Length: 228
Image (cartoon, rainbow, N blue to C red):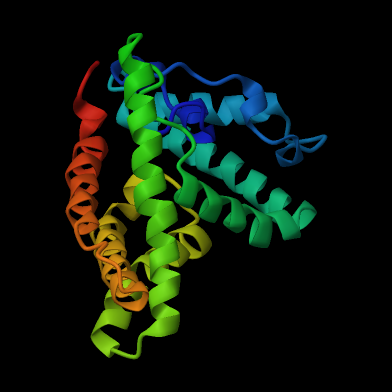
């Protein structure tokens, strides 16, 4: 769960406290989401119903009613948004998900204690630059240069995952692209080898440093259960 995300706005207090996340303000939600009938209060009501549906103190029948009511209201918001903002719903929102998948601008370590949060956020940014930016550049370079089917398949996996999660499932959390990380690192290593041959320079020693982000990213993606 990314801090300051729309998803955090919907989570219950118990979940936020457990994960040391502060609920973002109401303005984290886009104004285009609301209409004269479907207001912020309406959405808060649906959120409240959802919370009650998972409350163990609530009877099974009441929990089922709360769940049905929250789903009914959420569906009304979806239908209204698709009708009033078709361009945003079908295109712009997917491009935003792709951007967030690629950049991962929200570090999960911002809520950690100072100065640990500053150090870990910096490491998070460096890892993103190495793996995602340089990785995607390497993938594009190799896809244009190579004709080897196996290597094209390996380089194509990250592209497929980014497109699949951003444009089909519309997800942008870091966990959505965790499976792309090893293939991006392999692509970077291959790109270094390719450039070493093309430029007749020995860049192959850099391949060792490409392996370091794999270890770092593994720690990063499993750090949700770690309290700092």
